[in-house]
Picture (cartoon, rainbow, N blue to C red):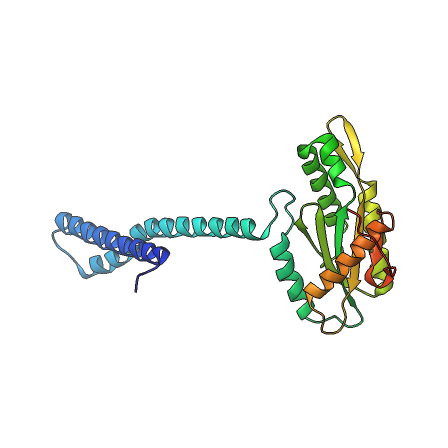
Amino acid sequence: MKLDHDILKALLIGAAITVAAVFDAVMLTHVWLHFVADIQPYHVYLSAVVLPVMITPVCLFLILRANVRVSRLAKENYRLAYMDALTDLPNRRAFFQKAEAMLQGGLPRGQVFLCGIADIDNFKHVNDQYGHDMGDVVLQGVSAAINAFAMKDTLVARLGGEEFSVAGFFSGAVEARLYADALVRAVEARTHRCGEEDVRVTISFGYCLSEPDETLSAMLTRADAALYAAKAAGKNRALANRDIPLQTASVA
């Protein structure tokens, strides 16, 4: 069976360190014998202490450097896999992984689990009028506003494009409603510097509260329906899935 490249490299490094340690020990012992003609027993014990003290720092340096490189590589791989590069928020993959874990962990006593989707209203107009670079500035500003408004243990992520997701526990439907409405107002109050102008944007926010044995995907579907209902109702508002009118139109 062919060894994995990383395993083979680790084995080679270990072998190199072992050979270097043996070589250093032999050479130091040879020098000691060359200059000390009359070897006494305590010399042997002394060498047993001195040689490791001389060799260990070199080996330790090599091991620590390798660990630092591995740690940095692991952090970079995690960032690339689970973080959104533009906003520094968790990405879609991270949201599904973490929110699913929250949902499966069960509801704390007396609390409800909220799952919501926020979408920037008329974002195409921002890109068309100010350019995509300024559009990125707005995305960063909105993500910062949503993240700053997040309550303790609330997960905020960027699903993609101008859509953001929110998941977390609340004491009840009333608190969830107050949070959703306040989130919309917090984004509306924030300004974004686009060239020489201070620009304000709004979001529509659709959310739902979990039902028994409901999956995260099912919750996102209900939240998405509420989002489109909020768009159809005039945008710049939060709407719970249970409050969706019987007939709504999809509005971008």
